[in-house]
Each structure stands twice: as C-alpha cells, then as structure tokens.
Image (cartoon, rainbow, N blue to C red; front, side, top):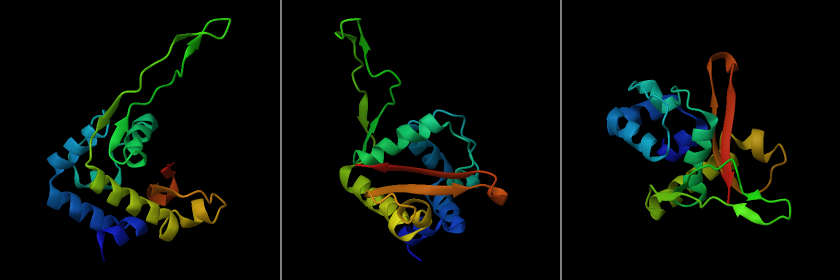
Length: 153
C-alpha cells in the first residue's frame, strides 16, 4: 500500500508507522510550523490526530495546502469602517512559507484524492459538493466525533 492510498483510506497503522519512522519530535516540530500551538503529547497516536487541536488551528494549518506551502494566519476581523464606509483599519495578512511548493503540491494532490477516491468521497463529493477540493476525514471511537477539514483553491 502506498502512503497516498493509506491517506485516502485513513489506514491508522500506516500513519502511526510513518510517524514513528519520521520521529515524534520531528512530527511535533512540523505541527508547530503549521501553526498548532496546543500542547502536543509525544505519543504515537499523535499521527491519528489525538492531540485535540482547536478548530481555528486546524483551519490555519490547512491554508498551507490551499496556498501551495504558504500558511496564512487566520483573521477574525476583515476591516473596520467608519459610519461613512471609509476603512479605518484593515489587517495585513501574515503569511509564511512552511513547505516547498513541490512537496505542498504532492500533499495537496493526495488530500484531493481523499475526496475523489477515499473516505471523504461520500461525505463531500457524492453529497453534492462538486467543486474540486481536498481534505481529511477523522473519527473517534464509536463515531462520537466525526470530522472533515478541507479546502478549495
């Protein structure tokens, strides 16, 4: 089984084996580069998303795929206008390259495969969302929590 196929099918054993081979400290370092600031325990289940990151952190991390390697900090306030509609304040986007473009392209393509060929197919594509997109599904024991986080260009 390729890593791509394992990602599409959410094959947990392959994810954990890959994390252990790469090294848990390296995995934590990568998570930090992607904007995860939550406390990260160095345990093998980290590869399965067991850390319980805040949704806003995951959204920020996934901007990296949509932007081919450039992470954009989330911003809750788009702008402040006075009563006449003049912009008083507007934040400047904070962007930082965290992956090379070729690696980001490969990961983006693999995440698009989750929607085309994998666990996200019925929840996204066959449910009627036909815009090209990518993302990753996740579930907890007994389907207590079921997640999908994704992106479009």
